[in-house]
Length: 283
Image 1 (spheres, rainbow, N blue to C red):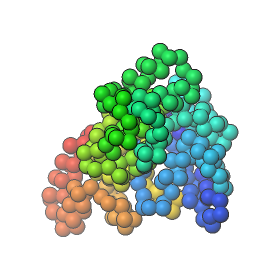
Image 2: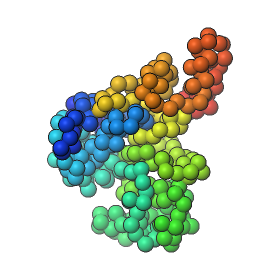
Image 3: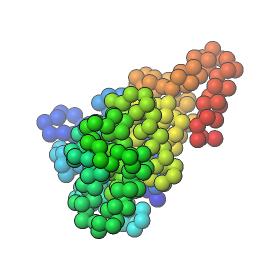
């Protein structure tokens, strides 16, 4: 089942002369871990904003094509053109790059409860969801903390927990670790991987950390100038490494070494690539 279908999507912002998205066609499958990469300004973030209707409802511009969101529990399909953002957000949760822009309550617990209160959920269900989201985020012992006092990694995990409490079926994350130190980055990426692997949540991750994506994603989409130019499993993209480098996409060190050794016709090249994928979830 496809949880998101993008058909002939074109979009340009008001007063802009060019289309940021220029003919995107993309299906995202239930339970999939999809990575999106591309150079700066390629349209990655704009695409993410179309998945739950922020574009075209909250951010206006010239919008063509259609984005269809399917609730995997009911099978009901919603066009983002005519479905309100709050409704779409219960199916597709969006986490932005800067957690501070999403946190505005006085305690960690209040932050997670905020969206649930707006949904008008019964108190017992709210408490169950809060407990579950804080446990998943590893923040059970931080519930009374003032969010700005948390570390960067904890703040981002809190932003994810606040979205998770709404029980979305798809979690879209737009470069969620860019501003984090290595420890914070590792904790957030481990959480994202766990959500997909253990909770069955569909993940769409935009990230410059291609090492993580090549190891963990089921499929990677490469965007440039508002168009999908490459698409496939991590293994299927190996022959396209040269094209990725030309786009300025930083490759995992192992793949950089593979490229050099391959050009030298060294037998070590295949050993490196096999070891790289053997250490990931890809067989």
